[in-house]
Image (cartoon, rainbow, N blue to C red; front, side):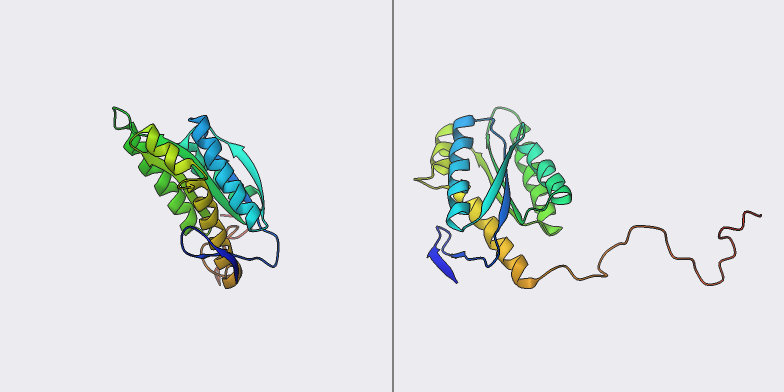
Length: 183
């Protein structure tokens, strides 16, 4: 069920219940971030969703912000937006690899995340990719998050009894050391 085909070739998902996303943006290159944000907002609105936007200092802080929001707030999905332009040092590789890896790990834990962190060689590449009238990578990241939210809703809530449980461990049968105060 879809209203139109998005740039990725998939139909835009439709939702019976409203969708709320968090857009986390690193505005280090403000003009590029603003274009990414415009594309993401337009895609979310076209799908009938709503969003909140937060800014963080840089691309490395995007996964931390999304991870915190995933634990503390009730968002259906997340969009990470930012731009990393290659410089003269290996810092570029660190930022690109670590931010991407952290977002992937959060996704594997069940968060619905669209990765819109541009990793480019120069400003010109970033401008074309961020421009909503050109490659619209911000819109593409929002579309990815929306598709993952649709899948999560299709498959239902997590199964109980999977993973570790927190709290006190149950006492083993015949355990004499519990609460007697004697040695």
